[in-house]
Length: 217
Image (cartoon, rainbow, N blue to C red):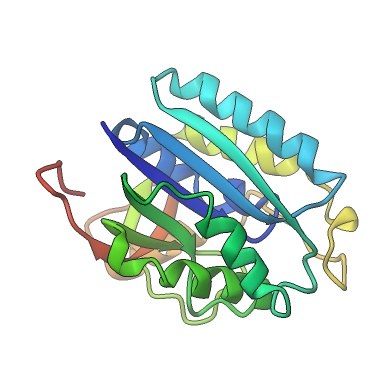
């Protein structure tokens, strides 16, 4: 276990919404998990820190979780893309093997697109490059479905419900993060995997996956 995972999220809360399944399933493969968050929000940051601490306590493994706040503004990432790229790349130890988990190329959110483009520049250097679904994705085509236990789903739901959409940095500040009817993972599984029907899933798209002698998916 001498490799790292670098997760890039545009906003505080993106990790909880989309990344839990991958972490629950694969965390034992990593010595370090770096949660890079591109933008800051004074309301959300203490919640994120608490959520990550609770996640670490649940994993109870030797894997270390590192929260790295890059402190950019959520409505200016396109203009500040090169600065964000520099901030992220200079925080990566390129002497170590690493995997990448980031936003998808078909995401409609400009900040998410910027994060994907930055991490895509590391495709050839990473062992695995996986993108995750977000509610702002268009034509997302997952090919990797990770089942969540009811306990894991409840943890995910509890962490997300701590946030307040009205204190978001979006222009509208309307909508919701997650509720009992938001089950897009299960919908994708039922459409694509007829023999599998569990209640809760997180869904991903594998862009690159090399094992280097490790266990496969």
